[in-house]
Image 1 (cartoon, helix red, strand yellow):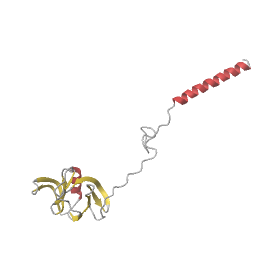
Image 2 (cartoon, helix red, strand yellow):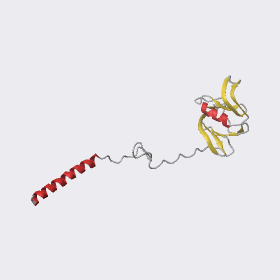
Image 3 (cartoon, one colour):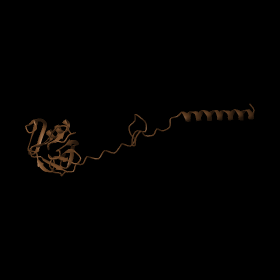
Image 4 (cartoon, one colour):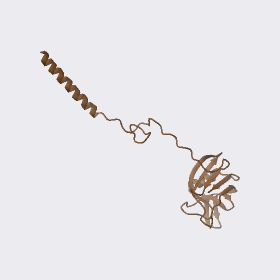
Length: 172
């Protein structure tokens, strides 16, 4: 084989290898963009950088409170030494003329199923903390005659957690 033919043959082989290599490079998948910040780079694989833990919930009451309620945001929490152990849970409270008062109170008694003789209505998971005012199951979309209405889940949690003598703080 002459040197000219060898050079042409080598040049053709180099060009062919280059074309084949370029085809493989184009066919290779590009690195995936993360689906969300801190998310996996490749679907199905765990995140390379784990997301930061969510901040612990904060309630506006003192460390003495076992139950905390904020009227302005219609939220309530269960507390232990100033740390939130449940909540926030949605609530509704007294309508104008029947306002739920702000202040510091103590749980007086609780009753799993109480019947309100004043309003001829059931009060499931009732926890009384200010005379005839109690936490209990009720429609949170409507205001009450002073009681704190809660979802079934919220009222049950409050009923199971609170005991007579526990401090309830109600803030504006």
